[in-house]
Image (tube, rainbow, N blue to C red; front, top):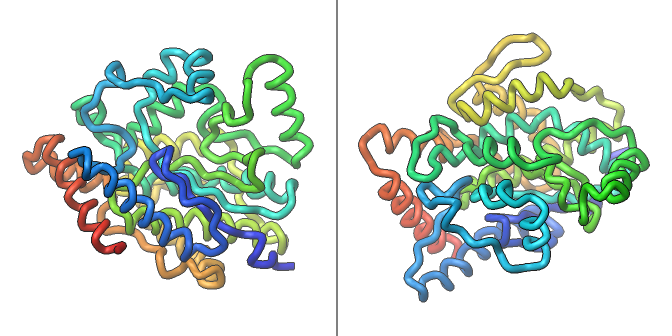
Length: 331
């Protein structure tokens, strides 16, 4: 039985602190994503501050940053210390509402298999602290390799197994709140959603919308497959980690391993296959209009400009100016 459309709704968290809120359709989420950026830039204009979005700040040192003064961040500071100090990174998170707790767990487990593709498409952070890292997503290397309970999660059979794990963490004093499970995809205990957290923040609002549309459509396509008994991949952690490394190192311009054939294929070709697979469901949900793969993603564009002789500061300023054009287009 196909899930009714009301059981699948998107909303995004952008730049770790700017939220669209709950949306009933993807068109609403896409509109609010642009609106929130425009509202934020309107505030920054009065302060003489230029804003852009990317997976890492290109030159700012983590030592110069202050921890946000809220109870949540104070707790994380006390718990993690250097790990949280070092995390000067920014992501785009997409929540998709899923009806049924066991169904949400199965969708989460299936989404594991597509995290490298989403990262390759979204990579936008080749620079950290004034250094060209030669990674396309330095954010992923910093965040997933330092935080506990991070990266690609285990497979859980059902909600009971997931809940038992969360209770174990609380009982043993490993966590003080459920959001301290920082996996790249996770069921959210405060909302009835599956949250995709693997993606870098996007400088271009159109690409942010496109990426969110893919996350939403992919989640819905997986839910459809599970409901109808369609076979889905279930690759072991060690193989997914190989592709995750390729994605963070080479992004969209590299290769991912076709795990069924055991052969490397261009990451772009793998993304094209994925878009073809999700297209029918994306059309049903009104998200197909936004699905696209750019000629070059943000990391590729930044690296190319650096190779042409542009400084990191110049590249960032160009992104700020492009953001200004984005704002005018959303009015």
